[in-house]
Length: 301
Image 1 (cartoon, rainbow, N blue to C red):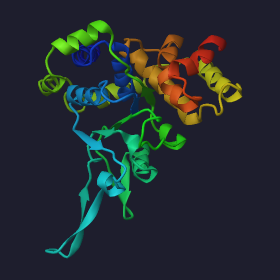
Image 2 (cartoon, rainbow, N blue to C red):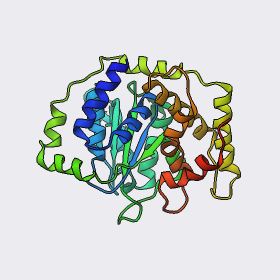
Image 3 (tube, helix red, strand yellow):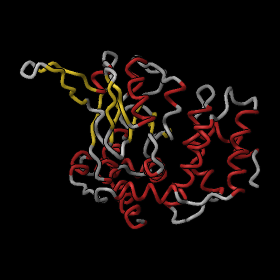
Image 4 (cartoon, helix red, strand yellow):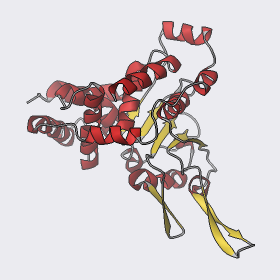
């Protein structure tokens, strides 16, 4: 399994240049059975990263372009009357894929955004009183533009909390951008990528992640971080129980990627900004700045 992880990371780094840590976080999120939110300005590779991971992991992939006039039925599907059989037949929407890219999700209205809530939480959708299971594994990778840009609807806290991680890609460094300018088209490179995981392999890896050991001392550290966010005046609201579980799941996945069978505090610290930043963010601060007091003031047991 570790060889496959290395192959996925190496291949992804050939497409998204100079962003190794962000790619590791994205893969960590998927191994932890989580959904990923990528927040950044247009044109830095958000969509490219999602498409690259789908290809390498062998997942069915569908991109949904969110706009101000998109409707829930455009995402979930709808029942259409069949005049031949005189019955209504359900036509699944684009959400019925293993990896769904919700592109520019914050350009849609809250009504359209909320169409993904049940899918993300329970891997199913309910249309006209009937429930339909989604294919497994199921992931949502959403991209959003900065909230100060024109035509955006901020994601409510309940929606943000459904995303296990939120990351920013940022601009490439000088050398990475030179390679990007001088190299081949990213779309052509993605088209030539092989699927590195056979069907069912990703689920096996996710089960292995769930089995990574977390000691009582490690759980004490996680609880100390969670309690600090709830008690400190620096944060308007603390991490929810879902946020705490997300932190532990992500730390287990990070330990698994590092070939460890037990979580250490450094694993928690490595994923803390991506897991907690969007949940306890204040003002316009980035995730690293938001969690800095946690890392500085909460002692490791």
